[in-house]
Length: 415
Length: 144
Image (cartoon, rainbow over all chains, first blue to last red; front, top):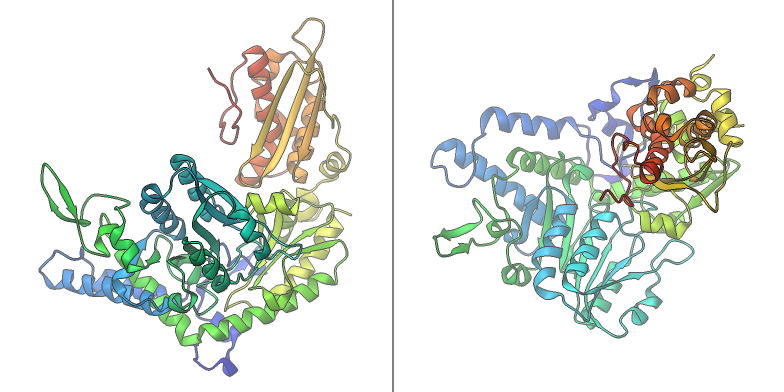
């Protein structure tokens, strides 16, 4: 294993050797994978853990009385404990496994929102939100008669907290929901301040941590949030699993989201009663192997050290902003390097992001081009789309150089 | 010819930089707006028929998008002028693809088809010609 806990010895090239995806050429060129914000690549250790689970311990969890069922149950619950530790939740029963952060937020929007929102209530989300933390609130507000209001951005792409008080006028703020890191432009949001404001107004705070959990150490108790959503696939885990953390007393008071097998206490013709936490929110067969993979991914990240990863990405963002700034006709979006995660969004004058990304792909460079599931933000920026390069623990400077080289070619083709 | 020239051949770049039929028509006989949900690109198509109420006399488009979608729509406006709504309503997409003349991945194919799909929706509304294949993204459809 190439990972090390010492940030001084952090070596992205060595880490890269754990990721088999890089052992190939794309269009005859080395792969410069600069789309980790959409989904991360996977270390061999994670995949091996899933394979071993399938080969030695696979059976359905919880009710089986035989040894394989016990092993599988222990693996699933062991993974829950890893997620608890990752976000420093007080109790593993507050960790609900879901498919992804989108499902986690839908769970809260439905199971909390449908019972607690109504006319005269206000839900505040920010202009930075991914559709995953925008559409569920818009939909549930529409269904319940609540109003959704947008927390605006400053010129530098940061949340304008001075606008908060005006947003509260004429109604009861019940929910404030923002991401911790913007997937589009990399802004790191001041969650503690937002939480303090939300709680002063008697609102709950829902944190979309899909883009922060892979890159920052998270402590739900220190942040003070009420719900927090993560996706496994963005933090070196498999696709198909994510987690919701919720404050125990809120989860206990909520109605279920999905109903069916496993989430019950007893089922009678006249009435069904719900299971204990976390089972009340985990209807159907759990994503068992995915949970094993997620646990292995968390082990991997923690062995490297999330602080070291954050520092590495920060350096890369600074390097990328500098290199891209050397090119003519480049517009950069988002805050300065010291206030952003490893995400750089930009446009090339006169050339649509789809065309930029296509020509980069021919040179082995994978970036994202589009609205990044953030159409409200794109409207705010006054563009239909941007190019986005995003970094992770395995990203090396050479990939950013390859990007810059590729952009020269893009400009030559369109000259 | 290198790989970039093959994809972005001169004629594509020419149509992108100097789009034919770019603009709007105030008194359009047929009109529709289309969007590509993958990238947020938008195109609006305006059609005016000749005195027979059937022949496409003028066709304009506005919107924003990538070189492929803009060039393909520009080429389309040249291709359909003078044809009847009935003909264009069933225009084989291969005819447009041949004109574009570059290999397209599935995602880029959607870019290339945005204009044609939108035009067919406009003609469907005005003349009842068949709807195009794959209507995802057209949120203004009134199919009743």
